[in-house]
Length: 113
Figure 1 (tube, helix red, strand yellow):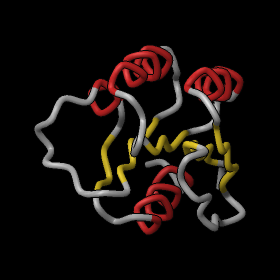
Figure 2 (cartoon, rainbow, N blue to C red):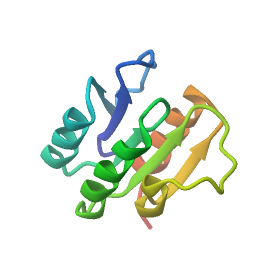
Figure 3 (tube, rainbow, N blue to C red):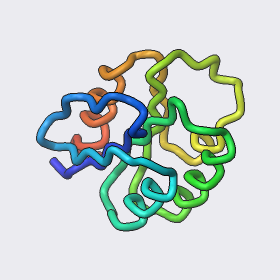
Figure 4 (cartoon, rainbow, N blue to C red):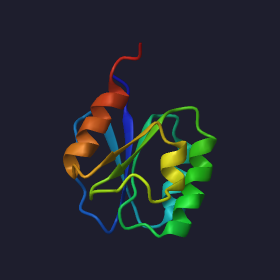
């Protein structure tokens, strides 16, 4: 299994993660951008609580990464409200709280066919 980068805004509690994950509990979106640029690992980006204008910056850096990214929304999402991050992500997990993060890690760290 390869390591998975899990980025969680500092305003949210850090979830318990499996060993196959590296937590980045970021203060600002700039911190998240730096972490994404510094790693080639697949990533999970928790977007709850982020300002909509910050999502554009995150989407821009995700477009330039070779590794896949999943957007995780701890709360439910209607699937239609605009999200620049979802447009460049491999998928979106929404409404499953911390279980969504764990399932995303399993997906990204699993074997590739």
